[in-house]
Length: 161
Ligand code: HEC
Image 1 (tube, rainbow, N blue to C red):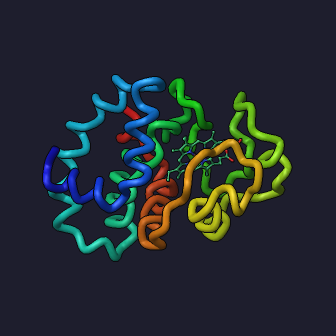
Image 2: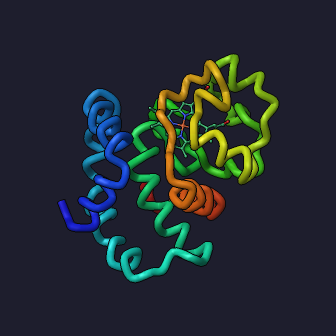
């Protein structure tokens, strides 16, 4: 693993462990195949201050890879993941990706995904939407949540290739 990879892993040990636990049964090959792309993106991210939306989106792209990609694609195609595609999720009504069987809890939440609702959900999914099928402890760092939200706003394609 690269130094950048090690830093990312320790920053997000819980979710990283979750990814490792889930990857073999779900999408092991594709998760492993994504590693070279992640390390080639690392220098740009390390050099950036992460204050502008663009650099936050770069950090968010890397966080997405480790925290979310085991269960979500970021392209319109769900890509065989157990979660819905997150392509264009910002501004979308909750539980509105076509063809995904959402939990009654999320389907009935009445939420619209803007920055504030996403931030609260990603901090503690089961607290914001009790009964959600998203089994994910939450992302404690506000800066990491903001970075992932910037990434999701950028209508990304690269991390799911
Ligand atoms: C263990 C698998 C898993 C992980 C990891 C995971 N999710 Fe999810 N996510 C799901 C599932 C399953 C759903 C559908 C939840 C439901 O129906 O209640 C979901 C739903 C969502 C939704 C609502 C989508 C919609 O169409 O309304 C968002 C937003 C979301 N996840 C973002 C994220 C982000 C960002 C991450 C990484 C920080 C992440 N998720 C990590 C499984 C996961």
